[in-house]
Image 1 (spheres, rainbow, N blue to C red):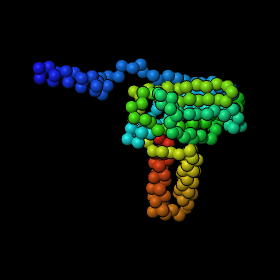
Image 2: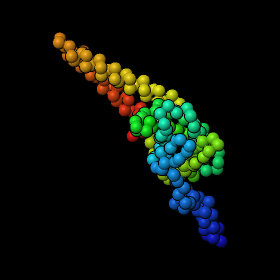
Image 3: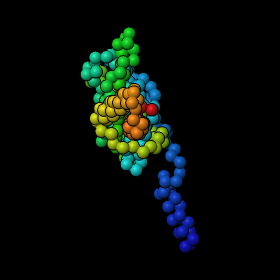
Image 4: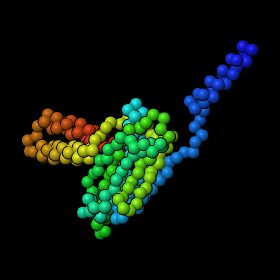
Length: 213
């Protein structure tokens, strides 16, 4: 009798904890990544990868908008992030400056960085991209397709920060060239400037990693 009770308790325990040790047999719900979505006078290249820092419960995705140069403020798109239960998640959106890609057609692209809170045990993330009075699209990323990566909160001014650090890098390169171009060179000064320049290169590379890759 006691053995039967123990066996029954074991089966009950296995049933209750099965989600923790059995493979997830739900359909993988990743859709519309690595696609182009079409809106009125705006095209959006969707994210290739969604990075997640599991220790910080922080997620990150990068999109690209293609627009006519000079129309950056026209035909705006709204980006929102939801969990699989339809709850809007805490998130922010950072937008880069436009860079021309097709001069003849006057087209350019800009990056859209989205960082968001990732709930524990989430099934999938839903990134909604809406153009008012026009089109709504959804990009779904299943948790099994998350790529684990150490992240830090970049903030809505991220691209401005990148631009400032890149300008510092250019200024340092210019300063070094001037020093190397002098007839009477000071090797100690040149070596010091090279060291500062290298550190700035590494800094710029680090802050752009995962967004410009």
